[in-house]
Length: 95
Image 1 (cartoon, one colour):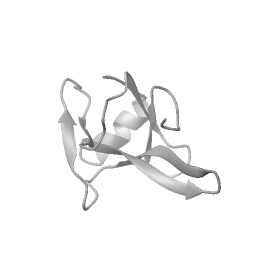
Image 2 (cartoon, helix red, strand yellow; image 1 turned 45 degrees about the vertical axis):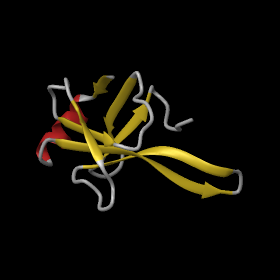
Image 3 (cartoon, rainbow, N blue to C red; image 1 turned 60 degrees about the vertical axis):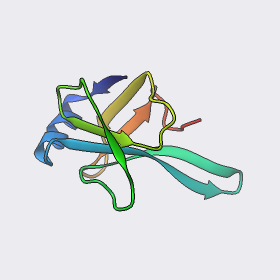
Image 4 (cartoon, rainbow, N blue to C red; image 1 turned 180 degrees about the vertical axis):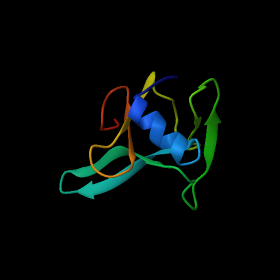
């Protein structure tokens, strides 16, 4: 998996301890479920993560429940608020 991270995202991740946890978040709507990526600087309770080796910018952990890793994981600082957004192969929605 190739990680593409903006400088602003790297700065925020490092300022918050140097770790990023990524998992798939499912939300319900009238057309069914929507799957997006969620991120945190601390592991959320009740979820298991695996460390992704080979990324020198920060420690990256992804949900152990993921069936496959993306070719690319894009990490950017959110436009609003001090948080990081992640995109799977450049997309906000996971199929």
